[in-house]
Image (tube, rainbow, N blue to C red):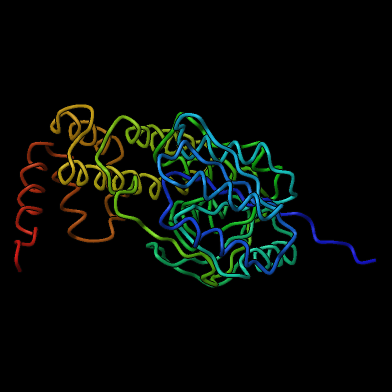
Length: 328
């Protein structure tokens, strides 16, 4: 009798995704790797997402649907799925996205053939520098993470040996950049990461998602993540520090732009911008600034570090001028 392949636990955090959830779940059902369990964690959705989760669980025994009574955030939802996982491996798929039918099979084969602890594939719909197939040590993978190449900074599109994930849960006090913190923690403990560039994961960025929304206290947690990683890397992975500091500059810039475009939820815009100005200054130095990817970003970061008021004037003028007129 043939030995059955080990079980893969697929964890799907769900929040108000009724428009795209069926497409996501159908793409999981279609997997050529059939020995899996699909753990759906409904994070107190206010739309029909919870009913969709239950419907799939009712007709396919591989599905399990769990429901939070109050919204706890994606970290808590993923952790709940991890704790309930019975598989030898775990894969994360977001409810907005969809995957190719051979995602799990190729991730598993890539992992086992290379004796790796994590297998990562390519993805589309996200800004990323692709690279050739390669096998990295954990330390080399941390540098890849810092350089944002060749694999992305998020937990999906990867297959993990379950023990590394169960021992490194997501930080539930972090609501923005929690993915980066999770990967930094996990990669720092593994021995080998295997990457191949096949684009088997399709990222879908929805309007109204957290990425596009206004700035509030939850998003400020990204600043503490950047501070922690830069501090820890300076002790344990010094070769990565300029890249992580440049990443911090970029995140401060993106969040400052979002503040000008969409406003601040919990405090005046100027107070919010001042936070990003101060945090950007902490990570600004010759090496991190030299890694800026465009002259426009470099100039914007300089203005942000110089003065939050100057940045507000520059950004508000730019977005006002760039806003299309009605009827055109």
